[in-house]
Amino acid sequence: MNTAPRVLVTGGAGFIGSHYVRTLLGSSGPGGPEVTVLDKLTYAGNPANLDPVRGHPGFAFVHGDVCDPVLVDKLVSEHDQIVHFAAESHVDRSIAGADAFVRTNVLGTQTLLDAAVRNRVSTVVQVSTDEVYGSIDTGSWTEDQPLRPNSPYAATKASADLIALSYHRTHGLDVRVTRCSNNYGHHQFPEKVVPLFITRLLDGGRVPLYGDGSHVRDWLHVDDHVRAVELVRARGRAGEVYNIGGDTELSNRELTGLLLEACGADWSRVDHVEDRKGHDRRYSVDWTKIRDELGYRPGKDFATGLAETVAWYGQNRSWWEPLLDRAAL
Ligand SMILES: NC(=O)c1ccc[n+]([C@@H]2O[C@H](COP(=O)([O-])OP(=O)(O)OC[C@H]3O[C@@H](n4cnc5c(N)ncnc54)[C@H](O)[C@@H]3O)[C@@H](O)[C@H]2O)c1
Image 1 (cartoon, rainbow, N blue to C red):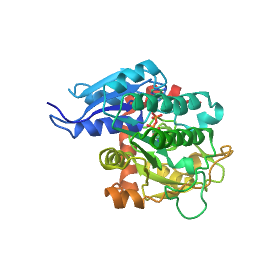
Image 2 (cartoon, rainbow, N blue to C red; image 1 turned 90 degrees about the vertical axis):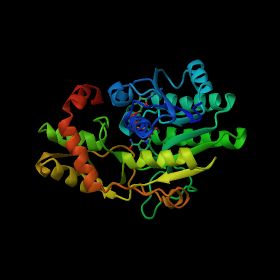
Image 3 (cartoon, rainbow, N blue to C red; image 1 turned 45 degrees about the vertical axis):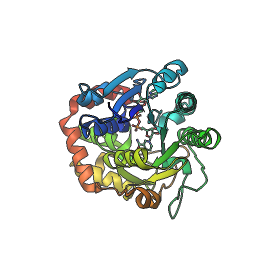
């Protein structure tokens, strides 16, 4: 009898969720975890991201909405654990309109948590973001810092975090929250800055740099993020929050310079555009807790990760070219 957990992964056709599923199933032999992906396949969801695991005996895919209580209840009743990635994830889209963000990120999380309580699921990992903390000029956030989100996206993620943690306190549900910095890597939808710039530069086009380019983000390779989420699922503690960092703080201007260089382009390809509304100055997470408790450390240095990412987009035009229409806001 297989005693490995049956894991429901929401949003598993997206960038990070699909990395997680490919990693989990790719490294498991007979008797490994069974994984079901629940994904609505919004503009950001791509079934092709799951092609490498489609024939795996432990894999199943369900096309559906995390806000659908009947479907979610049925699926949750058939699983032991949940890793919750499904979200509307692009800040600029949340500024253009927040409806889908509130619906999926807040109501979707609540729908999932209610089903988890009803069906006595053993563990829920809520995949969150460092953006819930707001903006920090110096130093780094520890997990006990107050949440002061600024964009509608970040506010919906903060709401979901707080609801998830309340289900631990109120219902005793084993919820673990992760808050990571900006992810990069292959298979990222070409609307986020790294793949947007790479695909435009590879096509000979121009790239937009917000404001004075001084905004600072920490960059985390998606492989490192996925490894950290897996550590939290397997060995994290109930009711705890874990920050996940990549140890690579860069201003957007520095990032742009590195992307130009990696794509063989220069600053004449950059348009300086009006700043994003409410643009947070700097994010910085202190990830001492996950290092000390679970042995996490980012393994991919940024220069190598970026070179590999640029090479992947160069070799996989058939993956991203059909997405360019959908990427336009
Ligand atoms: N990308 C980052 O840098 C980053 C950083 C911090 C946190 N996160 C968080 O990580 C998670 C995954 O991010 P990503 O970059 O892979 O996002 P993504 O936009 O690439 O993928 C999101 C996935 O969720 C699915 N989805 C959306 N609404 C749904 C719904 N109502 N029901 C079911 N599925 C739905 C989409 O179809 C898609 O497959 C999100 O929760 C995001 O907030 C991302």
